[in-house]
Every structure is written in structure tokens, then in C-alpha cells.
Image (cartoon, rainbow, N blue to C red; front, side):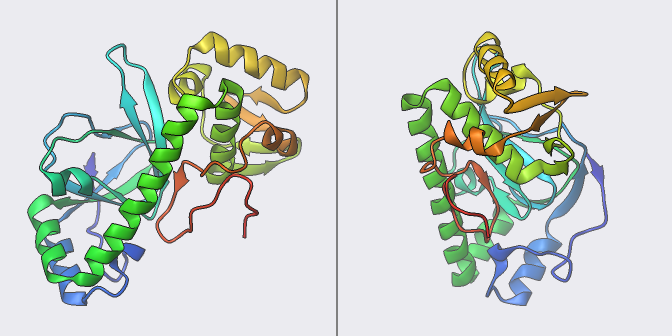
Length: 252
């Protein structure tokens, strides 16, 4: 991580501070540090001491659990604006999840004491954070259910649809997912082995659903992809201020 100019109340755009007194926001940010992180950097790891709260000001991250063998099971994707790390700060336990940048990101690192002071002083901040935690808990609960009951192809389709929403760019032959993804990345994300992902992707390629080009996937037929997804499952991608939506909900 390298230092970057401090984020201030004037430049911060985060619904977590809606209705919060300006003096409280200023004091919290004044005790915080702003960091710029490159893609593919570890922000925090499981079992580290939870002494900081994080505000994702720009960019995006993945939230995951790591097995003893190193497999990463992705439970959420956050795109700015978002926050994380408050759960452990409030419960006095070590971080239970790991967070990794997916692209260049700007993150405000808030000391635990500064967060707790702001929550004591501001009912608005406490309510905003409670709503945000509840939304992310709903996503985590549904993702846990998906890992238990959904077939691999459905889980992979849901993951692709989230990547399309967050990172999709129009291309001549479909929708380009602009961040690079390997089959190992996809296997780790849904808690399976690479050969199972290979088998599903080969079938999708035969059906004209996806192709891979220069290390990135192009979804050629998102309608077919949606048919093998679970339209009622909440998307694991999340941004503050954006209502929770299942995969089958029409984008606004």
C-alpha cells in the first residue's frame, strides 16, 4: 500500500454517512488514513487482530474464506462505495474473512476506537451501519444456502452474472468481463476443483454461452447463462445504497 491524498467529507461519497453530523464525519476521517492499493493486493486476512474499519472509496474487492489447503471460497464482491471490518471491531474478535482487491482501489482505514466513538455519538451512523450489516448478512446466508444445495453449474452461472454486473463491458461478440479470471479462480470462488469448472465451461463453449480471449471471458449469450442460474438468489455483488436484488430482477 502507498499513501494517497486524504479523503475528506467533501470528496467522500458514501451512504453510510447519510444524515450524520458533519463534525462527527470530519473527526472520524481526521483520525483515519487513506491508502491506494493495486489490483490483487491483500487488504486484510483471517485471524488478524481487528483493530481497523475499512471504507471502500473507489475500486472493488472480494471477500472470501481460505481453507487450510489455500482454497478461497468467495462469499461477497464489494464495489465502491462499501464498508467492511465493522463486525469484528464491534464483537471484539479477530477478522473472520479475508479481503483482496480486484482492481486498483482507494480505501479509508479507520481505527477501531474512532469508529466506536462515532457510533456512540451518531444515531444516524449506527442505523446506517445496522442496515448495511443486515443486507450483507442476507447475502452471506443465501450464498451459504447456494453452496449447500445448488448444483455447480448454477453456482458458476450466478458468479458469472455478478462479474458481468460489476465488470461487464460491451464487446462485438457479447459482454467482456474486464478483469482476468482463471479456471482456478472460478473453482476457488465456488468451492470446487478446477476440472469441474473445465467441464462446465467446455459445455458452455459448445452452447455458445462463453468464450475466453486473452485471459478474459466474453459472455456471448447472457440469456442462456441466466437460464442455468437461480433467478431468486441474491447477487453476491454489493454496493452501499443499491437495493438487494436477485439475479432475475431487472436492472434499473
